[in-house]
Structures are given as C-alpha cells and as structure tokens.
Length: 402
Image 1 (cartoon, one colour):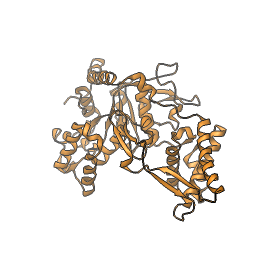
Image 2: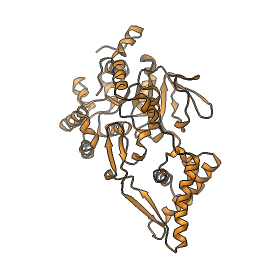
Image 3: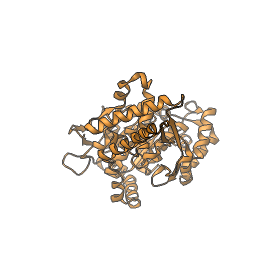
Image 4: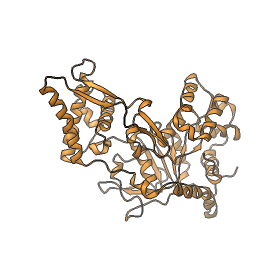
C-alpha cells in the first residue's frame, strides 16, 4: 500500500475515482429538484394558527365539560414508518397516534408540559425571537423535571404541528464539529471559516440560517468530498495528522457518536449546496453501522423530518468488516461480539433499507460469521499514522467504498 504524496499530480490521482462517483451521483439525482427539497418551513403566521387550533380544541372541550385530550403521532414505532430509497425512513401518512389526557393521573403532567411549551413557542414565534431547549427547561425546571423531557416534547410538538423545530424558533446547542475547506455566513452575518488545520468549528445551531456556502459573494468551498467521522477521538486524530491538508480540499464532520439533529442538518445542507460525495468512517461494529444508517436513511423518531435530515447518497468508506482480514489487522486488536452486538446485528439486517444495499448486507453477514468487531483505532496497530496516510488515501484513490 502506498501513502499519500504531497504533489499536485498525486492529489489529482487521489480524486479520480471520487470525481467519477460525483458524476454518477449528479446523473442519478435531479439537482434542481434535490436543492428545492431543502424545504422552507411553514410561515410564522401558519405556526401561530396551528398552535391556536390546538388551544381552541382544548377550550372547546372545556366548554363542553369534557376533559381535553392532545393527540400526538407515535414517533417510536417502525409500523408508522415507510422506506423510500430516495428519502430514507419517512413517517407514513396514516400513522398511529397516542393520546395525552388531562384527566388521567399518568398523563396529566405531560399534558401540562406540552401546553406550557406550546405557550413558550407561541411567544417566541410572535416576537420573532429564539430560545434554546435549555432555556425552555430553565423556564420551569419544577414542571419539566429534566432536559430530556423538554427535548422529547419539543420533537413531539414539531411532529404534531408538522413543522421543523427551527420554524418553532427553538434551537439546540450543537455537539458536532466541522473542519476543512469551508467558509460560510451565519444568519446574523457572522463569518465562519473552517479551514484551520488544527482546530474544528462547532456545527451551527441554526443550519437553516446559513447562507453563502457556494457561488455567492462570501462563499466558499472547493471540497471534493465530505467525510463523516463517527467518533470525536478519530476526528481529533485526523485533525492532528493534518488530514484536511493532506487530502485537500475536503470537509470533515463528526456528530460525536449518535448525531444530533444539527449535525444531520449540516450534512444535508452540504449535500444540497455542494453535491459532492459524502463518505462515512465508522467502527466496524453494529453501533457504528447504525450511526452511519442514521445519517443516510434517518431514524424512526425523526422520520417526520426525513426530507431535511437524510442523505441517501452516503457511501460506507470504512471501517469495513472485510478490511480486517484484507489488512491483516492483528488478532489482539479484534474484539469478540457480545450477545447485545449479535442481537443488534440481527435487528439491523431486518431493517428495510438493507434489501437495497446487498454490499452492506454482505459486510454485516461477514461480521456475523467471524463474530468479531473492531474500532477504527485498531488500524494504529499496523502503523501509528496508517489511517490518515495510507488507509483513507488508498480508499479514496481506488474507490474502496460501498
């Protein structure tokens, strides 16, 4: 295996297969339609009307001496989701619902919490101001009890009102990081430059407000590809190894494990704007594969927002289970699958999207047979800089993705 060189000719060779992939992707999607898929949410007036409609239902029930009931789409059931290869996991129109009653001891607190958050959102939208989910929690810690409760209810309301969270004027602090050949402008006209080779930038909390990524006055990215990195430790190692310079121009992003909505929105924004290949670098284990599937096809819980969160063109760059034997990763760097791993692997293989990904299916079946998994860090047992100097450059040069 050869390591990546520094001259322009070698860099151009590295991108030959990546450029071919980009041409294939552009042929298979209607770029104009795909760009429009970055949907504009409902207007503030529409959001206010939808909230008023919910409150009117509560008032009407009270006027009839009936206990008010809120109806929420069920966001946790696979039965409510359909799979479309061009979109991912999408909530079905006739999905089942759950009711939150105001006269039932087990749900009265949740009813109060939903109404409280609806009132906060109404004020935010009306005054054209924004708040984080953390702000909402501290608005009434006694009522909400935990931040997790607020997070879940905001998503429930988003689904109930059929509006993305950003249209509700509720933001979340991002946990993701981004680096590489990218500059853009935030909604408040702050200029963000991700080109420092050693320090990453926090993913924006307001992705819909990002402007000027491409072809406009302040732009700017000449990146050939986007690399999604599963774990922060691997991302930091690649930064330390100066990967973004070695394989310049490119963009790296990590959601630090299971990605938050902002990291997923950013990956989607980059695809909508740049239309360049997006690769995933995850551990060769069931958990890493599931995380990659969230970026590519979405999750059941957020299936109501699939159009703005999924990037079905994501390619699996590594670490492939078949790479372990091919690269002769030392036995002591391999980890036996636990029962939990085997159960997760079995459930992954039953998911609807694997039927249209036979190459992915083969990799999962290989893991089932060998009964071992490996972290990306296991490549360091071959050579300390093997990942950034040999493995990734060769994968990109020779089209080693699936």
